[in-house]
Image 1 (spheres, one colour):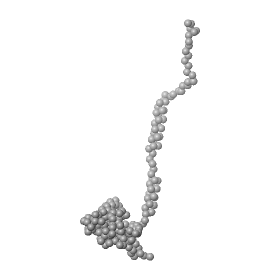
Image 2 (image 1 turned 180 degrees about the vertical axis):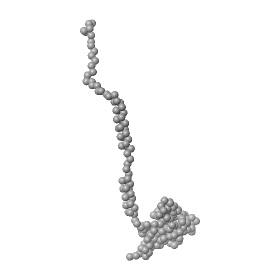
Image 3 (image 1 turned 120 degrees about the vertical axis):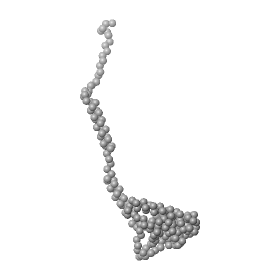
Image 4 (image 1 turned 135 degrees about the vertical axis):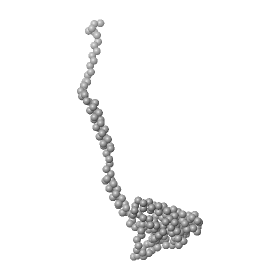
Length: 201
């Protein structure tokens, strides 16, 4: 075969464009990546300013504290608790409160012992039915004293002076009252105040 009949292979790359890359192209890419990473870190690591939040919480706390009753003792008479009346004008103090109702003995709004027919069950006393020491009442009062001691350690204005306020039904038997006071005395309470409802006006 002659040369004129040989197939000719033409290599042609159509529509191709070549972009000129500068010599420091790789360095520019690395620098741009570092800048973007640094920007993300600074945005993510920014500290939250909580001063305004703390101010709001402080204001809310003040309003919540003011919403509570100003009287240190809140007494709610009912069928189970008929409180005697008095003409005394003395204001109650903030102390541990022992409430002796017809059906229960309560320390700071927490029921601790059951009362039936003016008596505490023998199983709740140390020494049997004729004993004066009421076990669950003493336990609750000891815990109340320990709480006061802890508060006293961190707050000098809180002092435990051994005073308890007794709120009792006017038909409470003298024997039950004596047992309550004896048990409280074993828990370091040496002074007692009796809460009454004012009969003035």
